Amino acid sequence: MWTEEDLARIAEGLAWAAKTPPAETDLEDLLQRISAERGLGEDFMTNKRRLFSIDEYHRMAEGGRLELIRGEIVEMAAIGDRHALGVMLAADLLFDLKPRGIVNPQNPLWLPELESAPRPDVVLLRRRPDFRSHAPHAGDVLLLVEVSDTSLAYDRDFKIPIYAEAGILETWLADLSSDTIFAYRWPSPDGYKDVHAYRRGDRISPQEFPDARFLVGDLLG
Image (cartoon, rainbow, N blue to C red; front, side, top):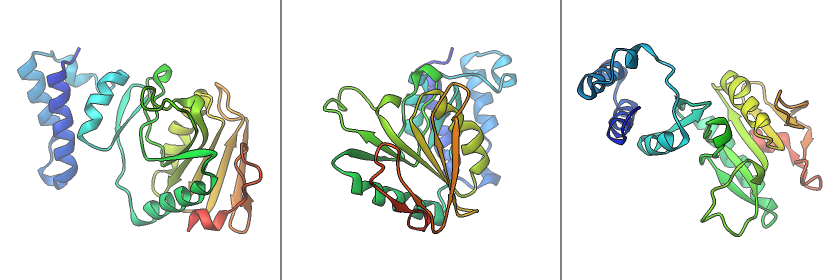
């Protein structure tokens, strides 16, 4: 089991690696040094799929843009200009649903039952009076939006199934490469039961707010 000091060292290394040109970055050397210093044993380096708890991830995530997916730490891809624009537009449009919901962009969503803490691009939360004492959880999510530029396969094949398993009512996957929004509805442990593709010229509405109709082009930019 890693100590808080170990986790702090790894978080520091990840943050440093994110700011350092690839030729100068050797994260494996950093892990080997931690292993030697802490006497963690040979299996520390050979077991690349060591799983983390929510608490461990929470401490490590302070060092950079990381998310926890089924116990595994994932370093998130850099946000390009088009991705950033898509997130901004989605958040701006969903702000129109205030005061019925709260827009929460790019913050961790705690799913402890799945050992996951993804960072969705935009989440629309139902209003609660006690967010200060209890962080948002899956039952608070009215709509979740992921914007995919270069990360379509990862978002679709790894994150969307987690959202379905957690019972999140509706997820939109905005695929910028095909100018399509895929709406995932009716969650189940085996995935979303309904998937519908919306393209430019179409209008899309959240299930919880059928009176709110957005042009797909306005969301994609």
